[in-house]
Length: 88
Length: 436
Picture 1: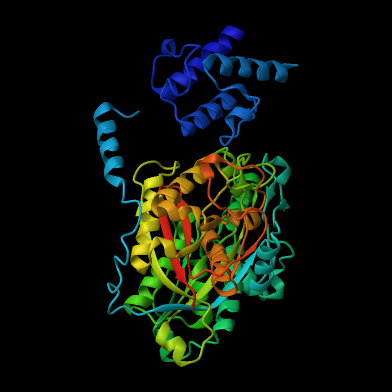
Picture 2: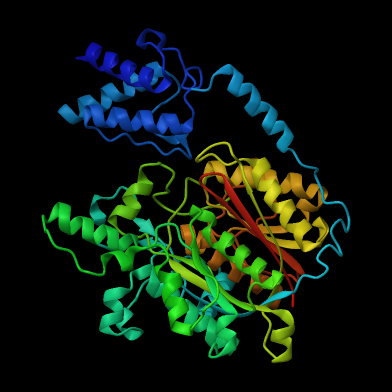
């Protein structure tokens, strides 16, 4: 399940960044991948649609959000948590 | 994604955009030779702070917020549930049954504001004056409530028939057309849609038409009625809305709050207004518009600065003559720091002496109607010497290190002011006013 979530998120981000999924490493920040603030909002929307979850994210204060967007690894962890909460 | 060649040309263009930090003294004085002067002789409004100008200005003086819990159908399905909504709105007080069937809320708001403005001006457009008068208004969403209600009827409720007036009700020019019919304005009449700068673009064009002799009187301003389920849901998508308050320039700001309402003004040729002994509220002295040509949502400080300096050049005003700026001040991270950077660069040392406030903290962001309601704060500054505050201000932000008139109105005499509007799409429009 977790591996599947990871792969789906990588695919979504890769599509947004116009890269290959393999290039979306855990350490990569959105900026590293060339994703600007609007691209990030779009990616979050795509992830919400893919997993039918609601991600708490305000573009004005991303650092205050419970959803940690520091890099791909933190984004994947946060989505896994939201998916698990939804299943619970 | 941008390829390298394009990225290079964008960088070059950004560099070319840079403008001189301050206006050369008296650079454009005399350039307006042959142009007519334009004054404001009437004002009207309805917004979350009040149903007329007096109650709106009272709220500005008291630093009162009009932002409350939203109240309309399906609001519980929104993640953003606050807004500066017009309360106690009963259209039947002002309009008959047939008019209500024909007027979307944005038209109703416009007509109410226009009637107040015309009444204050004392003008009668019968006869020759009507031929030399017109109306140009701003709106972004037009009859959005009408779209929303009728989509609901055909999609959600599965109805196959809609009211015959859906199209004349929702069209963006409906308000301008009804104003022209109400007062018999038979000159130029149209609507401008430039998102959050719509009203400023409209008023700027009205100013230019009167100044150049294309019309003697223009009704101008704008209106928005986007506070319905679809209108707010669309904005939620961008994730730039605050769930609790609009706190422009405050370090802890977390987004914009939508508002609704209208503002309408009578722009009149000065000699005509003087000859008939009209009460002149303020003089419109300059206008400039610019396009960032860069990004559909992220603002550019250079684009904003070009509109600010352009308005001063057009007015023949020096930077140090500007006492107050009504900011665009949306309360988003992106706008506020970009706007402050633009003002700081445009005014140089004088940026530390002028006052700049965002009244959106009180009346919310009226999108296409916002510049019109904000012009009231400019008129109050010039006429009454009272500067409307930026309320909700809690923590200084080093990236917005200007005098933002935090939380309390201030009594200061000012002679010239600017009103900023910077829209999505990178469209900027700045108006300059002078004390009458």
